[in-house]
Amino acid sequence: MSAPLDNAVATAPRATRREWIGLAVLALPCLLYAMDLTVLNLAVPHLSADLKPSSTELLWIIDIYGFVVAGALIPMGVYGDRIGRRKLLLIGAACFGLASILAAFAGSVAELIAARAVLGLAAATLAPSTLSLIRNMFLDDKQRTIAIGIWISSFSAGGALGPVLGGVLLEYFWWGSVFLLNVPIMLLLLAVGPFLLSEYRDPQAGRPDLVSAALSLGTTLSIIYGIKRLAESGFSWQPVATILAGIVIGWIFLRRQKHLETPFIDLALFRRATFSAALGINIISVFAAFGTFLFVAQYLQLVIGLSPLEAGLWSAPSGVTFIIGSNLTPLILRYVSRANVITGGLALTAASFLVMAQVDGGAQDLGHVVASYVLMSLGLAVIFTLTTDFVIGAAPPERAGLAAGMAETSSEFGGALGIAILGSVVTAIYRPLISGSLPADLPEAAALAARDTLGGALGAAAELPAALGDSLVSASRAAYVDAFQVIALICAVALAIAAVIAAWLLRRGDTPTETLTPSFDGETS
Image (cartoon, rainbow, N blue to C red; front, side, top):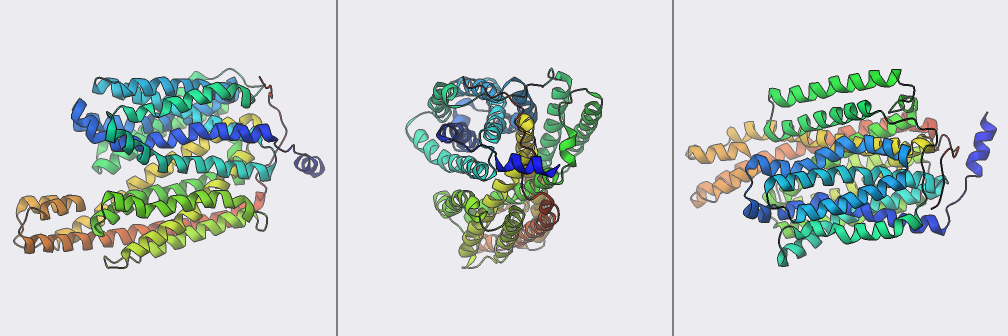
């Protein structure tokens, strides 16, 4: 049985110039996907002054995009397998462009929230469609790894370009202009996509199961919403009940899949060690990365005392390193096995958090944070490139959309868990420490603000007499440094565990492609 598979791998067709040009086209929506996650943060003060949303409404304006994306990724990936990945991508691109125009000219909070929800739904078509198209365009393992590295780099580039372009637009135009960034790029995709991208679909796909799609959406939305609310407002029964409801809906969803002739999700994928291990490693890595991004930004500004611009500039080397690392990964694979490269990347990232844990509030902190950030980006670039490759390669080509949706959903879960759990750890450590070290003569209002957050403490200190304010600043920063050290150590331990998982499970299937039978429609219209 091994000879046919070996021959299939050996004779897998190599991509031509058309596929590489098509990859450049696929990078466009990924660039926008990442940009749209960042530009709104810059526009918040401006749209708040114009639309005057309440605190709850502002939270929905910011969060609704991510919620809808997280919930719709798997259903969109599955529908791409059924109706055609290029078709779904172009439909999503058209909807994304139209929703961007609606968001730009929204005249009320309700209109903006609705437009952001449609943007999220359209964005959920982009990542799984582009990644599943890559799976079918690049059947050669080595070429596919290079393509995935470029695909991941486009997200990083979008995250870096978003604040810069958004800042320029906000300097000269109204807040809605940041959404219009999307329109010309989506028009370009719609113009060239039909000619440069081949269509792929599962020719044996059954009719879409709308009940399963609704259950999948309900599961993901409920759990992610509950986790984010726990991170924002602390423990309460409402977010816990929401998470429990999502788990129950998920159980119903899984039970339904076992009785469907054509299941919405092929549960057999999870019996492949490389597929499940790669998803788990991805969740742990995103947990550590996204969970610390917020706290590193706060550390640079509130502990070290950098301005937002200075903090952004000192963070820039990590973004450049990530792009370099994701594109160097295929070169490293010429000399080292995939499992060993992922294990090494996890070990490097764990070491970066150990460096980060050396901060002590002193003069060397900036060097520790920047060095650890660069090391972390290098390790994560390797991890994300190869875990994505393992997930996509473990699925047969006709199920690539499902695999892509699951890869992206695992990232959403990891990010939400990281922010919620590490945020809770910071709060649990910071508040008792600051409460025990507040100056005795501190006014009650200032004490309440200081116990809440480090930002609140620094704001209260600015309004106090110099000596008392300096004392409060020193106490609050010391408490935050201690909390920061603990979450860095937690991330290091989590990544070390992931490295053990990688060394144990991924070696069993070091070549990511377990089947290369091209059972898909390859029409080129």
